[in-house]
Image (tube, rainbow, N blue to C red; front, side, top):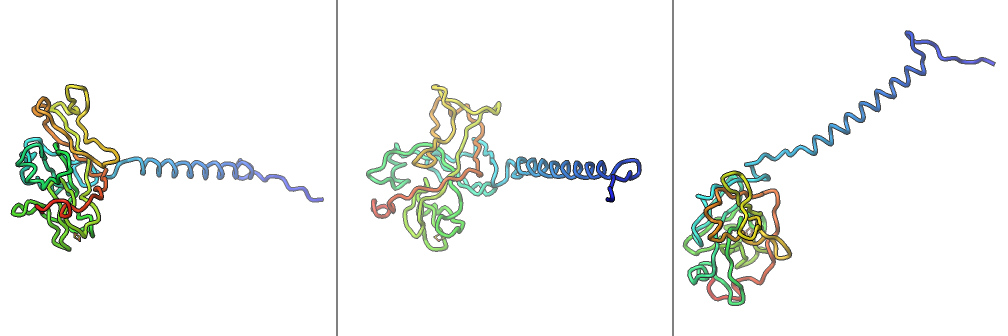
Amino acid sequence: MAVTTAEPVSGISRREFLYYIWGASIALYLAEVGGLIIWFAIPRIKEGTFGGVIRVEASRLPAVNAAPLNEANGRFWLVNLDTTTSEGVERMYQAGDESATTGVVALYKVCTHLGCIYPWNEATNRFECPCHGSKYRLDGRRIEAPAPRSLDRFPVTAYDAEGNVVTDAAGNRLISPSGDGGIGPLVITADVRDKITQFAVDTGTRTDGLVLTLLKDVTSSP
Ligand code: FES
């Protein structure tokens, strides 16, 4: 019976040669997998562009209940609300059963109906979508359909001049609260106002606006 033996190939046996090929294939495979993991792990959205964190100087924050700041780079409106005053109640068309709203909110500039970009209308004191007529209040609450929900929001964080997140007297960090009610306003009390030099809006973390009763059905103002 013929017996086959491994023939030396340039000083190495065929079996050794196959081991080397197999080892090289495994190494190549692992390198590809490692490369893919690193590629996915590296953030591809730069800070300062939509999808990342957009910084807004505190000096640009609108006055309380004033027209919103149009931040085109970040595709959001920055609004500063206070409905604890009668002026604020009027400006915000606050419904009788609503509690007061105070703080800073970042609203996504895309209509929740079919995605049109909507402007702020200073004459009527609300956001009005030119496509199908949806209307929203200064804090993003839906006034009129066909929008299926209020405007979407991004979380806001307040920073000081050293680049640290500002904390209030109780040690709470100034970051938009979020929960079942969506992203709430970032409340700025008098004791921390002067510490804030920048607001950071995370446009990579968008939260759907709430589905609340149309404001036009609960108040006569809009
Ligand atoms: S896209 Fe705004 S109302 Fe339709």
